[in-house]
Image (tube, helix red, strand yellow):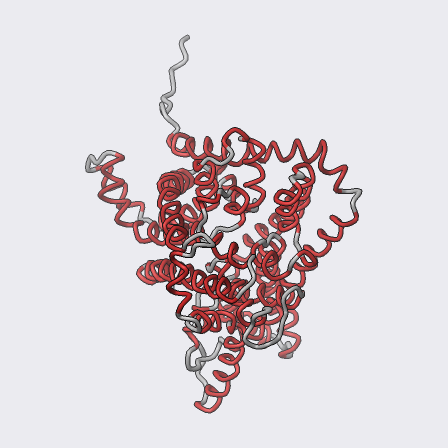
Length: 518
């Protein structure tokens, strides 16, 4: 008796959509990481583990990440309660709290140097101290903890009221009900701050010096100063081990947090006098916290001659060339980022769950580690522009994909099915139905990816060639020379880079507003 054949689809569409992304990940991430693992386990770790200096670097990196997390959580919690109330400037401050997160590290570092550096306007030199590093980490990461807490607090009112109705005192209700509900958000935000601080590069390199070098900075020193590839790979392995443990915990907390978070509640009213008092306190805190950024803008106009000399400086990379390289490399990288990000988002949306996790891996690996992996994996291509563009695309395409994915998941299924029933093919459905519904999210994702590319510093410094100097490298180049003019030219370039990032951020925020997410 002949068994009837079952009909099977000829093509696994999600698999075909994700195939180019997997191929790119294999060449641009997995193979270079494999070379790091081989060299690290065979030659690097035996040397690094017997050197107490590297143990101190690991201990300081852990302390920096943990201290930054505790500092951000400790200040974000009372601030979140302050943001429960309506006061003048509340929405502006809440929105601005995440702006530093997308600013290039060189811009933030220049802000601190111009305020509390050797040439700082305050006359207080905090360069080479741990204090300035924790301040910078707080400026960068406070919004990552604050925004989720402000969203979560209104959702606590109902369970707290239920506990009070059942006879619990206010303190007991908060301790037994409020704290367990807040804990996942605090741990999740703290984990994220730990990851960003533990793997930070630009700020410790420019503000901390060798004494406060993190593992990431020490990896760069091993490469640039000693060409010690085995030791550099061992440091990358140490960093990856810690990152994997913390990231696993963070993802589990995110799943739990997603069940508890509600939407943004309306701020509670206050009497006029109380609202003014609260506004003075919160505005004062943010003015002090962000004072390096305000001071950077002021110092940029302190010496107008620097605005003229920076573009054709004979002793350094001209600012015009650095700006041209920055925009040109970003444009070239976008040619790769756009198809990779769109294919990644569409494949995951169509059910390719394997790619969902793999696509996040580039965000876990530091830029310096990626640069090191490329030097090991493709020595014949050292100095090739293709390698640099691939590194930019690898580090930024997940930002586009993750911004596009929620819009795809929110797309009404009935609209797409109706187009299919009416005879529209896949390409026609994409152009006429799907793309108009997700294009704002796509533009926001592209703006985020471009901002990340233009401010990228670690991979650029590792893979650089003199004629490839970007704005970040031109700033770093000037900071290495004594004298007032190089310093003011670096400040001018930092302001130009900040202006580019802010313009892209405005485009990003406009996209979010049009989608009704702000």
